[in-house]
Length: 292
Length: 144
Image 1 (cartoon, rainbow over the protein chains, first blue to last red):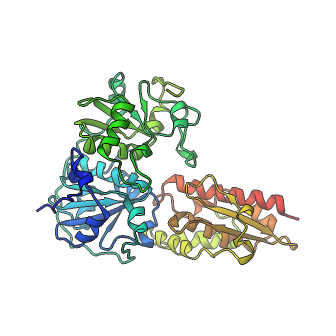
Image 2: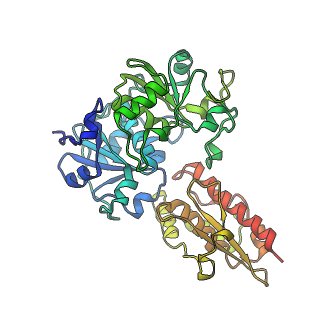
Image 3: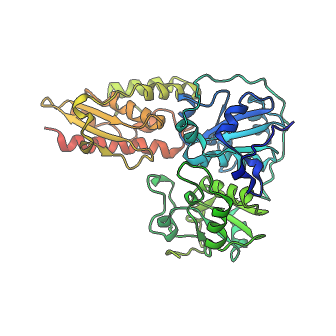
């Protein structure tokens, strides 16, 4: 039984209003049977210094990435991960995190590779919850282990590989990195020097829409009308377009992918997780430089 | 591979390496919680502090070298940046009390000697390397 959706009027305008919940809704629904809350952060210690009561930690680096190959976990690992957190196929998962939910939407995207049905994002994430003075705890919950089936990961519909991007050239691409990374002035985001690439610039034809333009100051997503101004009028997307979003390693573009897929309802939108750290170091792939 | 580590840092490294991955996270958390507040005399002097640009969280460091050439390291970082606080705390507690030449001799590879590579993405560890290099630069400028 899925947990009822949040009927917040702002969400009603989105094509898929059921994928977001407000901090109010979450506080009221904590403890509801069938709901599991997960925290997914960039900072590996944040969960430990205080998290939403009853929430479990998920770590993008150690839980979602394959430990050897640059890839995601397989069905067996996901089954273990979910079983240990009391998640069943019909569980409603709500994810929140730091950095305006970069890693929360990244986790949602990985869960969607396996087709878990009901995954939602806490609008505004960890910072909003804390700024509103809502309850935190350092107590770690104990889950009643479930048996989650071993599902096949399906990369085809929402994940793009480098070859898919090459075949896609000429169709819409959204580059969500900073303007300096897009133009090629720098190969990495400020303060992330080691995640650079050998060449600077962007994938030819990409439109530059830095991820943060999709959110308000408090980290919540902008309204549907504002998002349409940004991506349709601004970046030139039209309904029904086949779109690929990318950034540097695929986390900021998960955030934009989420907005395009669920809030604006683009059916075919993929996240290119290889992103600039792959493209900018690959041999003989086309690159454009300069602002546009 | 602790040949170039002074005893205080070698002990920290051994403490981490003796633990499994989960307990290493816990130990880093303890360091984060134990980062001392700035002493009164520096609390209202943000201009003395240097921003560590290699870290994406705002962390600031300041090094004092006294007339005996003994180093003290001070650092400040937001509560909501515990990993960065943990790194700053390891360096502040490990390096403070050492002589300036000993600090300059610390291996730049120290952040990689804590067994954290598997649990923390490489980007955070490089941030700690940035802190160490900046501390050493300040020491070389301020030593007698």
